[in-house]
Image 1 (tube, rainbow, N blue to C red):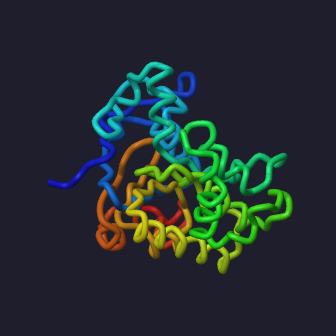
Image 2 (tube, helix red, strand yellow; image 1 turned 180 degrees about the vertical axis):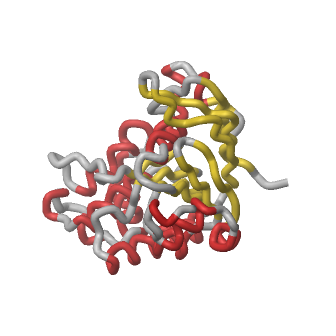
Length: 250
């Protein structure tokens, strides 16, 4: 039996009266790169926020390592969030702190890490994402791609079993985006990290995804292996991968 790290069942979420997620169900297997895809406004980022515990659903269940995130109280939720990594679309770095201090912050705040070890650990985490030389730089001195990688280094600061990554390639040129994709694959191989990634970038999906979940109007229209996603006879899926506009749907 597959080792399931996340199990979502009949998840429903609203913004006011608008139903943004409608009966979403899926599983994420430990050690895979699971990509959530779909057009703008389909519910991708909202789903990610629910998985992280940043939003509460109207109904349904989100099990993370067997515990229901949707039913946790504030203390339980905070404890759970300290065991996962979250890399934001904007990188989420604090501009008043050096890159190294940004990466060190989770170690100091939540990791119970000996202060004498932190400097070496920070350098190691930054080296994993190719930023060892940036430890003492300020975020404002980094390029967009470097900021994304620094955000990823902070997300893996406490060796989480699971990292959520929101639109990692957004705003990056194709060469930098490809480098970030390779970085994600390297971390999966080296650290056995599970990644749940929200994206609409076709090249990234084709390069790094093990399995794909496609949302459309808040509903799951496909969940399966990448090779199945590339060939499944589902019109919305074919439109997405073929980059066809709406007027071509019959």
